[in-house]
Length: 125
Image 1 (cartoon, one colour):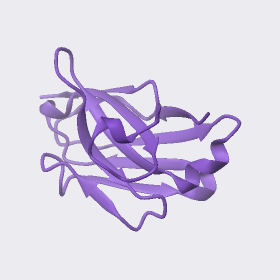
Image 2 (cartoon, helix red, strand yellow):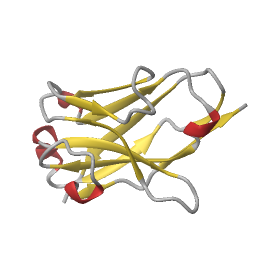
Image 3 (tube, helix red, strand yellow):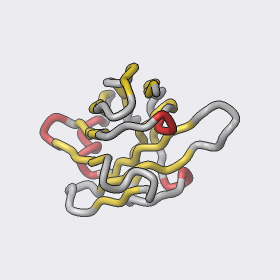
Image 4 (cartoon, helix red, strand yellow):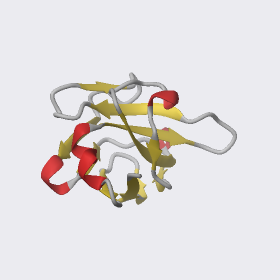
């Protein structure tokens, strides 16, 4: 079982930046470096939506149109950590952000086997 823990959320003004981290732990955390990792977000009353994903090697990434050019996903496998750098934040980016790990870097929730508990990001106007 791979356990994922998100951190780095908080309150920021519009136009500001945050960097989220997704760290793996648990008995089989070593397989984290062979898994794709995605970031998703969810606001109350709405479905969880895709934000970004990265392949196991970091060589392939994909982003939702709403965050392209503002967010960057990266990973350091030696640290079993994936990052989401969020710049030029907007109030509509406010959500709980979740990281997830799975075999391939897809944009659908069903493609991921392991999920973190989420971290709150609030962007004030």
